[in-house]
Length: 146
View 1 (cartoon, rainbow, N blue to C red):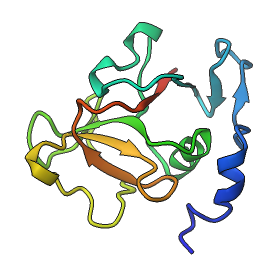
View 2 (cartoon, rainbow, N blue to C red; view 1 turned 30 degrees about the horizontal axis):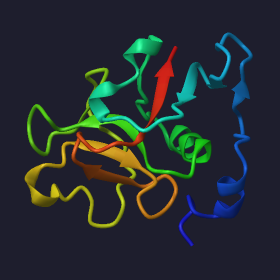
View 3 (cartoon, rainbow, N blue to C red; view 1 turned 135 degrees about the horizontal axis):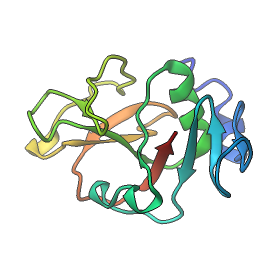
């Protein structure tokens, strides 16, 4: 069993997030603290470009295995993360401009299917696994701010 899918039934039925503290330690209401950031899961699906800017945040930048696991517990649906290769095909960058150093791609991903997959969703086939898809599709947003 893949380590990120272990206990997945618990993740699918509970919005409690291990290590996350809702609305406390400096995060606004409906935001959850994990390590030094606050996270927000949108209620509605939007395109990647609709982003989190209106909330003073960016799509999540995943910097560690722990953060990816935390994100996978926030929601059981496919959600946008802040990773794209729009500027140069095959060169993945985070919305903060940092390079991709740690990956959690699903099997066979990224594949740039039909040549138009420049944005990334999480929860591809299993919690915590990533998939490249067209940016115009609608997904829920996972926003992050310090």
